[in-house]
Image (cartoon, rainbow, N blue to C red; front, side):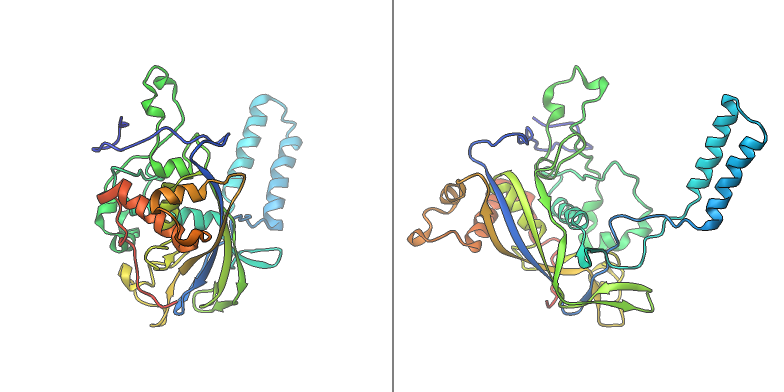
Length: 348
């Protein structure tokens, strides 16, 4: 019951259904608060970036088209050459993300895609190759000298190849066993090629704090002690899913997670030096504020199985949920989960 993977055998499972509710699972909405640590800035770029197009570029495109008509060109080859010339011009456009913090309706945000990517990566690094793939394994990695701080922070163990899950069935696999259609538990939750996600993050929206500009770096940053709110929805969720999410958000350790640019360059834990001798980048500490079920009423039963009776019949607390999720991880994954990996001690 293992898929083919580089030098290892990985425990996999059939993907959890996305199109219907199943017994023994719950749909959850979780509300989180995130706070930028006392001696940290956060810098994230906009999730959509437009290329800079000036009048000079527009005139050059006009000249290409005008030359095509002035020459009386009308053959298929002539048209193909025009298309190639225009495409070449478009490829020359430089897309440089603006050095400003993203905003939506004038509200300062950290994009959901940035948070989801960081949380997923943290989970993968904190699990053994027997349990989790690397979702970006197939992408071309930069030279090691460009991510040496990343390895310093996480440890050299994470540099070992793992392969990545894919739910896309290739033509040459049509006659293979259905085993190739199974995925690791992280891909089952976060999705993989051909498989939709079961977890949905909202943008982090600033509720207090400010944005300031660092002139020497030429960027806007989120100031220390700024606070954000966010929600996460999970469909057909079990305690392992919750355990993974809380692991990625460091709810067990209370450690901040690192998010955004410069998070390694100015971090002594990654071999860098503090910015201006005092500040790191990207340190956000998360807290679970609230949670509720959507279209299900099974959470109490799940926790009863893991924790026993909730004392006095009281309402399930945040502490109950976090404790049950951790116990599930410890019981199911045992030596394959590394709670202390990636943990840092920073005052928030």
